[in-house]
Each structure stands twice: as structure tokens, then as C-alpha cells.
Image (cartoon, rainbow, N blue to C red; front, side, top):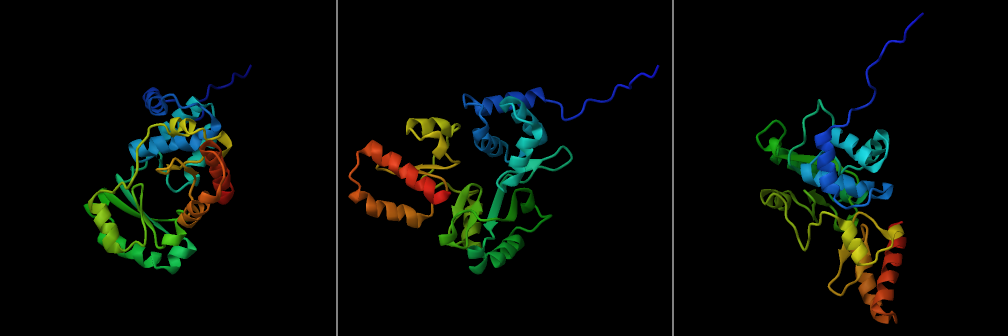
Length: 245
């Protein structure tokens, strides 16, 4: 009688320490599939990359397959998925947009110059890396670079270098561990939620990567909106949703 040989366990093994780290980062965030990108952002922002063990832990915590989490994480250039045999990236990444608008405005030359300023295999390369990436959604400000999480409009080598020396800068920004609380605070309906939320001083809410010309257009037309503040906010969300689709 032939006995079946016991094979090794397939797939990646759940790392208990990684699971605790993911649970701590997610905190009270609902474990829903539509919040996967936001969860990935939390891991990326905390560790500057997403390790294979964190992919497994996040999949377990959100009751998704490893493949589904991996595919989403590797689809977006903002996320750095690192396998066990790979070296984690430097703590600061400078991304140069290579969309058509930026390319026509000198993005290729900007990338080459930055790579000369911060060459590979140098001491600086251990702290900084330069990446050419797809559209970052700021075409009206081409060429655009992003230092860490902060965009640099009409970027030049000198301007980017200045921000790199500051190790990135934050302009009118606030760090939140869980954006869901912000979205719920302002009653943003689930179908209109995105990875970015901005609130003006007047209380108007903007979701997603909205070109500045549309925001300016809104503030010009809002005076003609005969709506209550709450109704206006809901109207803004719907307008913005249509703009970004």
C-alpha cells in the first residue's frame, strides 16, 4: 500500500510579530476590502516599505488572499513591496512624474540631474533614491517631483535638493493614523471615499486627486449655491466624485 508523502506547508507562514504590528497600525479601522489601500498606506508610512511578512499578516487580518493584497500593493508605485531576499529601500524616496505633461516640461532631464546629484552606490544612496513614476495627478504644475509624501511643483534640481536637505517638508498637512475617523466626522459617504481628504477653512471637503483649477472653479461658483452648509458639503463630494472618475 502506497503511503502519501507529507509535503511542506505551502504558501507563506503567518509571522505573529508582523500580525501584531499590523493590528496596532490598523487600530480600530474596519477590516473591509475597500480599505485595503488605506491599510497599505499605514504600513508603508510606518516602515517606508511593505515586507512580505506584512503582506501575509494584512491578508490574514483583512480575510483576503495573499495574492489579492500583493497585487494591489505592487500595482501602485507608492508602495514598496520587499521580499525576504531583497534589501529595503532608503528612508527617503524622490519620485519624478514621467507623465506626458511632465515629460514635455523637462521631467527626463530633471531625473537625470537628480541621479547625478544623488548617485547610486554612494553614501547618499543609502538615504535617498530617485524614481521615475507614472502620473502623480498634478499635471498643471509640471514638472512635478514628490519628496517623501510632499509634492514639489514646477520642480527644478535646486528646489528638489532644498527639500531633500530638509528630509521632506509638510505644508498645511496633518498626520492621522486613521483617516476613517476624519471621513466619518465629515459624513463622507463610503462610495465617495478615496485615499486623500482635504478640508478647507470654510469646512468644504474634497476627496481624491483634484486638480487645483477645479477647486478654484468651485470656490468661484459656491457663492451661487443656495444650499445649507451640510447640503453644500454633500454636493461638493458628489461633484468631486464625478471629476475624479
